[in-house]
Length: 75
Image (cartoon, rainbow, N blue to C red; front, side):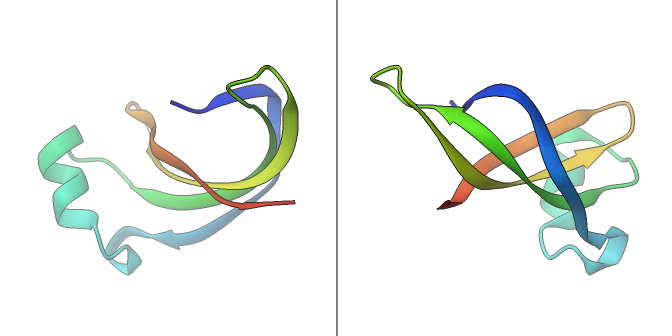
C-alpha cells in the first residue's frame, strides 16, 4: 500500500477509454466508467517513516476513484 503525503502534483492523463490496454480487466474488476490512466508526482512515505518524491501511475474513473496506484520511479 502506498502512503501519499499531501497531494499529487503535475497531473497528466496518459490514456483514455480504448487507449488503455487493461480496459476490459478494469471494467470486470471495478465496473464500467470513463477510465483514464494518469500519472503525477507525489511525496511517498516509506516504511521507515522517511519521505521521498516519486512518479506514480494509476487508473481512475468517475464514481469509482483511483485504483491500482504504483510507484514507477523515484525522483
